[in-house]
Image (cartoon, rainbow, N blue to C red; front, top):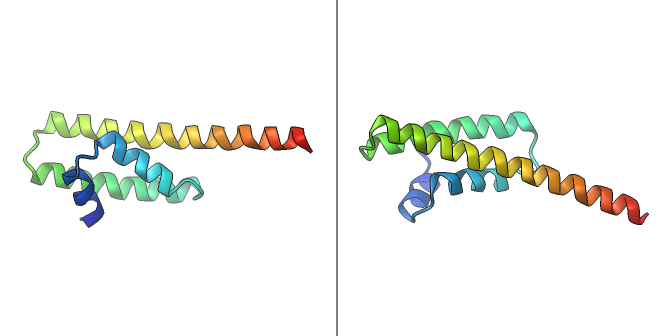
Length: 92
């Protein structure tokens, strides 16, 4: 299990915040690399939450929040980049 994941959780980072973090770290990576890392981190997080004694319904909720943070933030980053490209193209 990733020490960064455990440290983030212990520091009070929410599941959604952990998803946003991975989206930021993988912003310039292709989708297949993002999905591979997303899957690995989600698996590790589920194991961490299980080890901490969270019941299954709460772990599912946490997983959905992690997914929401990661996917929605990645889409936001992508849209922001497209907007900047359009602005830059308009200036040229």
